Amino acid sequence: MKHVILGNGPAGVIAAETIRKRAPHDQIVMIGCEDAPPYSRMAIPYLLMGNIQEPGTYLRKDADHFEKLKIEQIRGKASSVDLKAKKIELDGQSIAFDKLLVATGSVPVQPPIPGIDLPGVHPCWTLEDARAIAKLAKPGSRVLQMGAGFIGCIILEALASRKVKLTVVEMGDRMVPRMMTAVAGGMIKKWVQEKGVQVFTDTKVESIAQTGSCLTVKLSNGKALEVDLVISATGVKPNITFLKSSGLDIHTGILVNDQMQTSHPDVYAAGDVTESIDFSTGERIVNAIQPNAADQARIAAISMTGGDAQSLGALQINVLDTLGLISSSFGLWAGAKGGDHIELVDPDTYKYLRLEFLGDVLVGATCLGTTEHIGVLRGLIQGKIPLGDWKETLLGDPTKVMDAYLAAGQAQSAWMN
Image (cartoon, rainbow, N blue to C red; front, side):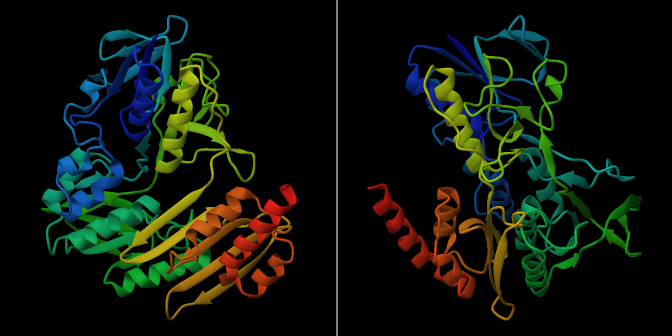
């Protein structure tokens, strides 16, 4: 059996290793398109901070790791997939497969802004991007970052550590608008500004122009800023352009079932490329977070080798550190239709907790300024544990989630026995 894995990020690596454990004699080919060993994009900010060197981003530190596992590595970029012939077109050569896993991850979204292609404008997504940014983001240099979402806030911290003069522009009405409530996102903005970062929300970049040795950036709020570097962190999308004529069922991402199988029985997908079932709603979503990619990769690999593994659904989980302020959100953090909530706010200490209920079940939560409740909140939401009278207790004091979790768990265990 020949397993071909398109993509050598975390999902591809975990899948390849899982297949090897389950099928010691099968052929495994893993394909990546960059000039580096398999690495973690999430480690790039630490590279920019100077906490690690490039080898520190590598997913496996032993240079012979994949060779020892007899996982063949190929460098190349897929241009198309022929499902009938079961072949991949790759830089002028064809690679046949018996089972295929698509784990090509995400690519940055490039907004349609005049001047976005100028030198000095960079995404921060690859090691090549990081090398270019490191040359320009020197202490005292003027940097404008477009986007203050999850990825943007991670990049923001790396840039701030390099002692640049940083301005962040976000189209939304708050920072991290896709994982934080309005109140929590506003608190993060205030925190970041107090750390010396200029932040404009409800603002767009209208154009970028070369002016001598610098760039002039015009904003929708009427301001024009001269900067040395522009970082584009305006979001990502599934990296699936090469599949458009393949015949696979694709919407925003590749449609998969709970075994990570696509519309073709011998083709699977895992990670950011997938459009899978949301744990909380039962609807399809693209859940581009690394824990989800790792879980899907394991399930796909088991399925590809004849095993029985099923996803319970993609749970939305986000945990973020923004210049020392920890924020997190889980499940239906924006609330459920017909549900209710409790919100606890302490702006002076940057503490925030909001719980979302549907009936007596916790379905979502948002936290700021503490990690104390993270595991408990995830457990309550993922377990769909009926809280009973404890819901009223939490509506009065949401910090009692640990007590509620223990009590509700004991009650559920007693009922099952």
